[in-house]
Image 1 (tube, rainbow, N blue to C red):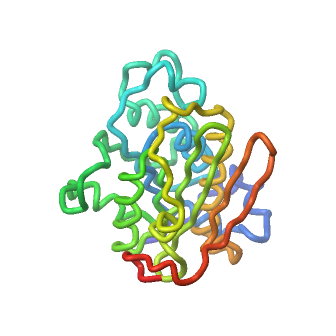
Image 2 (image 1 turned 120 degrees about the horizontal axis):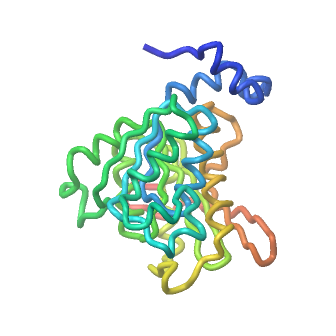
Length: 256
């Protein structure tokens, strides 16, 4: 059964509710939604903070890593006291302090396998239960696996990436748009990590915040979601650019 906003919640989210594009219906769509975030790094800490504070009903956080001191400049959910502890547990504690109404489930296991058959049933169920999945991982193997599951399970996907001074975003809604594999067919990106290439801390926060905004707009059924579009951000030129995917890329997954 769908939940309705309490009086206290309606007052708390008043600045959203007065927006005609949001209203009570939009805020209650957030309240009744579950978002699954895979990869609890810089992108996630920005995305999860915004989603939790904005009134998301439930979040599922997936990552097997522990907090390291080198994470702290950009992974702003964590403090020095969290170093050495589980990322998902530290994130849950901080997010609960931000909004105790948000139901947070954590899964401390890696989202990696040669194929979907070797993923745990719990990981597959987390994506199947989600209304939107946020890919906040930092490697192409995980991204391909997440896209494959989202496509098969008909779950909208908001993918984000950031490295050096550059960020990118892509929204894939099964049945309505191309999938992330279509993008990968056109742009084979090198599998570099932030350790090798570096990352300017504010860039991950910009991209992660944008992921949260896109996910909320998908949940509230906004009519101008940038489908079939690669969005890129360059922090050196301060430019956003949109790249439309051409037709007929011969994607093996979604046959576009």
